[in-house]
Image (cartoon, rainbow, N blue to C red):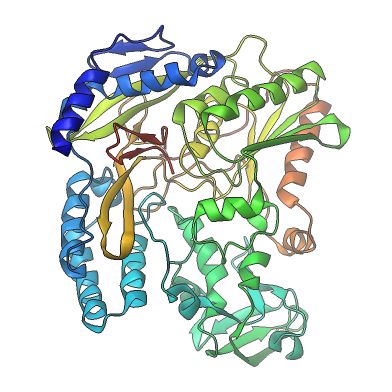
Length: 546
């Protein structure tokens, strides 16, 4: 009955005339948007949504049902069916070298044991480990409750945090007031040599990051979070640490015990976001965003007249305030613009392409968007989109701020900058490296929802772009990489937004060189993409980059 109703709804939607279109429909490629700005300049979300529906016309006849509801199955059976479903539809199995048989063999016994013991925390932990074994920030499980598993695993901190410098040394960057570490004389800059008998590099590599609210997809993103979670453990867990003072390099041993601290060390090591944000308390990117800003976009003027625009997601209603902020910078003849994407959780791909139109000086191919076709069992190209320069665009220097929490369509503007040599991308780290088209997957017992990408973003030659590969290389790398050393870390831990300072410094350098067009900088990008969160015909199918 549901199946028949959905088929009728599909047929109805594709029998109605299309609106005056900002894109061109083609049978071979769904929609073609030659200028991604136009749907947003038109400021008619209803018309745009109809174009998005039209883009699925090549596979619409095969979209007859949504993902399966396995919530009434046993935990083990539901996991088996989910693995099979994901193996059939996941867009990056070969690209990332995912071995589904090995994953099932590894995690099925853990789920079976959890079910036998009625241990919900162990069940949820095993699912997090399973999705964590696939280095894709879009592969996730979403649960109404973590059943106490997160606190049990990482509820304790050792009163200190560490970071790996560009030199390779790992140093102490934070010591909590009145903590055991402070009483033991641990200081900022102390070099950490070993952790629980392991060389510090090995200890970091062995650290689990399944509780990161925004899962990293690249090698450098994974390394960052392993450093952050190294100093988390179950409350009461002892640790033996060898450290050396930078002054005399004399080794000494410090014994610490993990104590409850409200995830303080995670909050204090969120400096890559340019602010303190306790992502340890957040269960998802949505919860984390609520702690950072209630807005989807904010803007202000920095000293010297530089425009600052922070964009937190790509939803239709973001374009007009973004446009207004850029036009204000143009009207004021702002000497530069900073666009902060360090916490951008994605949304609509075309919107990211539209942002870029305000800065580029020539058309730039954005992507071919694909999706799994249940009828053929193969990916189908559903749309093609381009960034085109806006009339009266901003021509001053533009610096983008990014981080490993710049994910999905949030990576689109940096991608265009890297490919076109526009402006600069400023950061300690590159973007997340998860650019696929995400869909809701099977519903599991205990109300746990799976999600993973069933489509990819392809470049003009048809190759996967931005998504990290089997070697964990991907995302968009900084063109101006901020040094990660004692001096910059000390400034950041004291509350300074060091990456923003470097962006402003870069802008001022362009002004001093009397450049009137955005400066061309050496680029370093990798594979990438996303589109909108579109629930198609009530199928509970999620097409987008979050």
